Image (cartoon, rainbow, N blue to C red):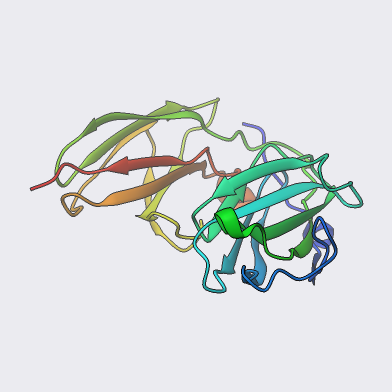
Length: 213
């Protein structure tokens, strides 16, 4: 089993705000998002969140530090948190976020910098997390083990920050979560548990809604 060592010194969060929008002017009809925060970073992903500022739709763009707006990866969302995946290890990125007010245009940007961690050795991340069955109170999952032998399943209400949900341990690459509420939407992640050497990165997100009453 290969192991994963995190270099904490590679993790430096730098926060900042920017008023750069397409016209370098303020749109008084569209409030900008507030309190953009980088909440969790590993070697290939970053989870961030923000306050709405009173709006309900947002656009963000990200890329390596110093990239030109319009050349990065753009995402439209109505959520107030997001997990960016498939990043390069030990790399500094910048994310620009603005409110999307439809016919009233866009707000000014807010922005933040973050640096991904360096991966020294791999503790293999579970892949192909998938739903097997769902009922009103249970969700059964499966995933590819990738030569690991223990995992932590974590779940919570949609939008929770990974690491703050409900963790459950297993030694087989499938698991049934029980005791759930009917008609509720849950967000689920799995990561390998490599003992004294810590955990792998989280799997991709799986969102499942239990059956209704």
